[in-house]
Image (tube, rainbow, N blue to C red):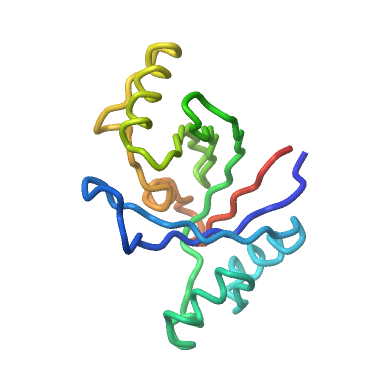
Length: 166
């Protein structure tokens, strides 16, 4: 059952814990399903709309009104998400993400402040569920994946709505 939506902007972390990865900070706002549908419809039609909440505040602080007004919808994704408490005080997130061309994929996120703990938990999960994280399937940008799987017959969204199911 869809009970809410979320708008998210990912911005570069100014104090990364490691320099191996491009660390990002997420700014999130909960939306009603009606708000998300209205934003998506406006973006699809090319009608200007303002982002509200913390995302809107970030955009207004860091970008000019002209830049904000020039945002165009170029692709989209819809994500079903499961959140779970994992071993070693890690938060686990499993996403099923669908794209405009019908392609879908799965993504596992392991969150903890200690990179060594994340590595240990990943090794445990790989063994338990018989998968291997490698260069080809790790740290893939959802925005990049949406761009690669946009529907060629329309010009869809850069805006990325995470639809969460309870």
